[in-house]
Length: 67
Image (cartoon, rainbow, N blue to C red; front, side, top):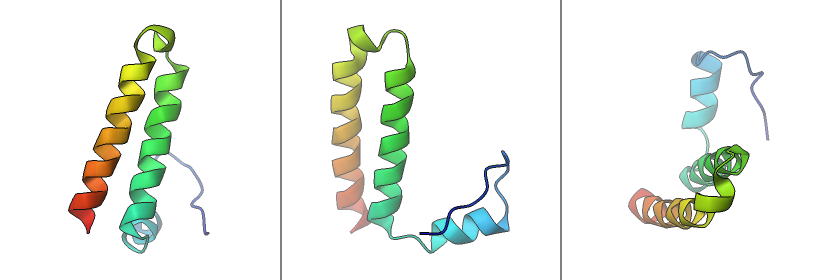
């Protein structure tokens, strides 16, 4: 897989990569990023189970809509 160099901007190369990616792959990567963010929060031990459950639910629904 080709990766874009992270520079904090969304430009034509980034958009091209996103538009050429399979929807399910894009959704999986987004859900993984969300999970990593949730796990980085200091309140994860308290609220994390719910956050991850909702993240999984949103991913499943998004994949259904993407079909």
